[in-house]
Image (cartoon, rainbow, N blue to C red; front, side):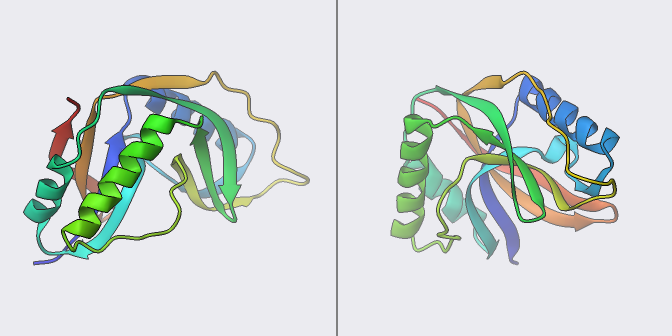
Length: 172
C-alpha cells in the first residue's frame, strides 16, 4: 500500500508559537487562505510522495549521522500565493539535507529533487481581501535545537491534511 511520505524536522513549541503569531497577524490584516494548523508546521527536508515501503526510507535515514544543531526562523516571504517563514543560512542543515538526499538516492527511493529552501509553510492559496499591500509583520525570531528528523505520513482528513510521525532518527 502506497503512502504519501516526507522527511521533516518537527517544530518545538517556541517555533510553533512564533509561526502562529505571524499567522494571526496576517488574519488581522485580512489575508485569507488555507492556514496550516499548528500541529502540521514543519521544515520539509525531503518530499518522497507516494511510496510503499516506509521501512526502506527509515533504513536510509538511519545511515545519515548528524550532531545536534540550531536553526533560527527569522524571515517571512512568499512563493506566489504560498506564504512561509524562512530560516537563517545553516551549514549543518544544508549538509544534513545533502546527506539525507544522497542516502535516499543510494537506496533507490524517489524524492522531489527541487532545490532545498529551508522554510515553514504558513498558508497556501493566500489572497488579500484589503486594499493596498499586506502590512509589515513584526515578530521575534525563534530558534530550536534539531536533534531528531522524522518520517511523516500525510493523509487527507475531513478538514485538511493529517501528518503522522511513523518513525524518527535522533542525532548522534
